[in-house]
Length: 325
Image (cartoon, rainbow, N blue to C red; front, side, top):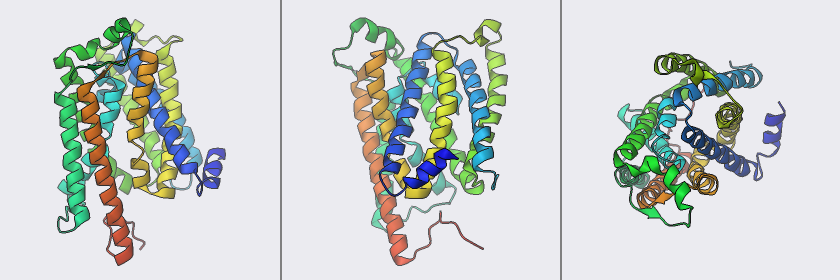
């Protein structure tokens, strides 16, 4: 495959870094397009269904090529009705931390508080969760960035009601907890990641169809036009499929911590794109909570990196290390 060969040739240079920046930009722009489409009145469950259709077809095609030898999206998009894409991206920065919490609860990883990196992971976790709490309960005043008042008022209407704000962030929290509960164990037991993504897309499409029929039985809700809805469906289904391939390659080339360290760029790109194209306002609580989340994430990632380096130097067995029989 041309994409894989190009990635392999760039593996020792700046290829992984540039690849991850492109991946995070695709993710961020997908969030912004979804937000803009929802503002125009698109129904989220129908939008998700068509996105899963395009994603299933494209990921199945990739799986046939890449894996031929090895063979809670609802809450996230629905939450964009009530909060900005920047907030959604900020909450996504808690995913590695919540995955770690699940690993500790399920005894797949130890706290190991006798080591400084174990204490560092705990500190990063507590800091990250604290930032999420700030983001969830404190909206704050609008940061004045000389936005058009009329546009900012229209696009920020969902944020003006604290009840809707809380509901939107709560949906993001549920999505993160649900995703983190299965993403770790499933990825370890099913190594063919492209095929796994294709299967997840297919079964998500089936489930989404049932939900969409129940909630939106009017035929007019299912009609597609040449608008942002169609752009989001194709953009997310195809480009995010390619982004998954790139992330898998970067993880194999540079390690999972390298990939996780780029997650905050989704929030940065989302904020820039929203302010540039949607004139969406920023709130003080959003800025403060996002910064605290980022600090916690990087404390955790740095501690995790030091732990893995120590395991390499002193021969400690890693829980996540694969074994050959």
